[in-house]
Image (cartoon, rainbow, N blue to C red; front, side):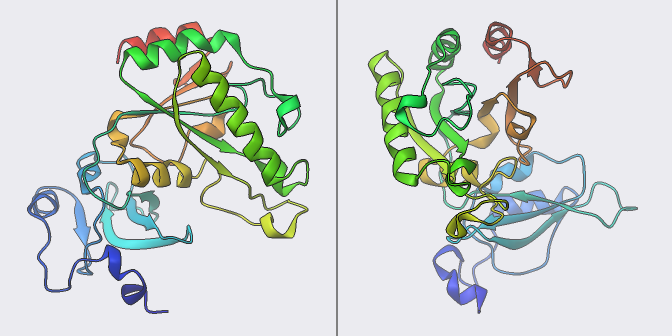
Length: 263
């Protein structure tokens, strides 16, 4: 497959110069570019210099990784580079709180994939009020391996999503959108039995949300209850509700809320 031809909608013409912004970044930092055409994406995120060797990619429409040819060398003695993803598009300016679903908005029972499984978490309400006060919009990003495992269907999931969204809207909280990953490598349903860059801790769902809603990831946060909610995306700030001693973890919504108020 000719990648350049297949993704021509996202590529500048070959004779188009790099943006002045990218030129300046490459000139005054440890970034390098291999000369391929620049894809229209959120290059402003390159201002956040990583603490390890990093290569930059995008997700294509099939959720596969496409290398941009941009890299950052933090440690010249190491040949290993982690992947960081940039959202495609332009004008990234919205501030979002990305929310895990199970364990944050509803109780994380045994695969709560149907409406009758939903138990809403009342103790999250003050946190949501704080997020709205701080001008965050709300987007849910949720792993739903129960679909791949045959615990419930995709239709069940969609009905449950509408039920949850309608409930929170009825008490004053608008969920802008919900992104989900139905895939799992150990799934029993062939259609969903695979690895996916959408599945947390991979950042695919957040990247897709940023592209759809022009989200500035450097001003956005991720809230979850598992270590897998700390995504392979260094732009976000993370707030995780569990008893882990990790610096991004909080033992209660109250302590998390206090930290977010300081942002």
